[in-house]
Length: 490
Image (cartoon, rainbow, N blue to C red; front, side, top):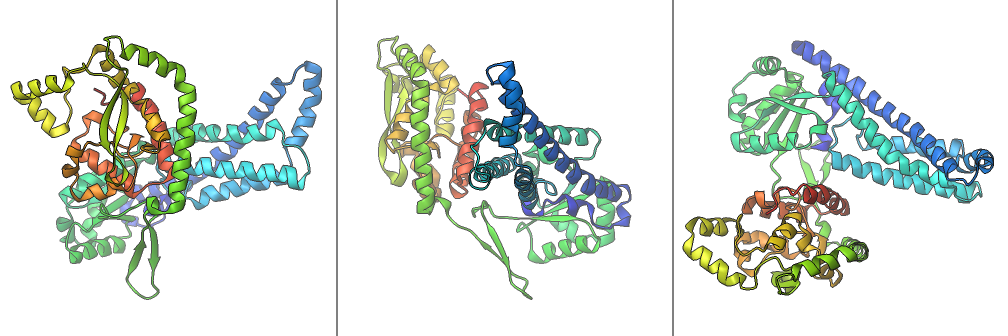
């Protein structure tokens, strides 16, 4: 919905009937972009001063610092060249809708990281190729500090605008019941976007209303933005609702039913004088270059993590052997292409775990029902005290880094399943076969054991259909708080 979630579209429509809501929308459309742009400019000034201060503080003596103040600044700051790079970066942010659209946080963060990295590369190029000078520490730190400075200031600006009632966009949803819940969940999933659902009306009901009645409904709810879910009703009803909303000069967004298509990277083409929109999708994971990038990312990341975590993993291996059993547990899981592999974990169960499970399922109907639904038990009697800690902290999965190095798993991917679970995936198993299972994944950061089995499958399929390297990075970053806060852990 990024392409239609424009702040300007919520404010530039001239609709006298909306009264105060219309005036508020116009104020939002002018004030919010200006405030966000100003925040980015101030963030750059702050990053310049922070980089300069750190560089000077790192110099060895007060005398050298005094001299270094001028030489370091002169080396790192190239006047018009650096200013041109910064203005180009602001232009990139503007082109990506960072100022005029409600951009989801992780998309926004990806744009900021990518844009700043390119700006850093351009600044280094100017330093070496154009100005023929060595790259100064202050010049590098300036861009390193820019990312966090920008994000903090933007968050502060959004908070201030929200406190003044100028960031929230009151939204009316026009959709049938099933699609309404999906649309509402999506709009409210990222609080930073500022959508506030103030009401809903069924598509069939809305189709019976005139444009004056629709305008009156929006005014009564205080709505300044209308989201219409198409694909959930008859084409005639959808066409009538959209036409009436346009005649009423109400800003609208269309949400098509695309739960069976990749939505990331979906490109739109229209044909002159034809009422046809062609949506071009592609399978990112099927592209050879994408597979090479993902493999390189996995191998480098796994090797780095193994080096950093070696002391911790050694201690955990010793703890896992306290009761005399083996430190590692090997279990057959389904990998890419349906090939089985030995998935490694720290042993968290008693040695005769299979016998204990069979006894529990045979004697406890509630446990048997829970196992059939989720393939898990909340109070699993097979788990050892040490194992319970390892599971709740997800540290039991660290040995899977060796599976990643061996090319059997990925750092991020679908949840590794056993053969018995293949049938539950139905036709979606073909998506699962396209990629290696992951050490973490979308399921891991979306509730883990608190998530239903069907929901887990849908999350895995969404990830596989919409894979990007940035999604992998975002999931890895979101895994850290999910593990430490033990969300949905058992």
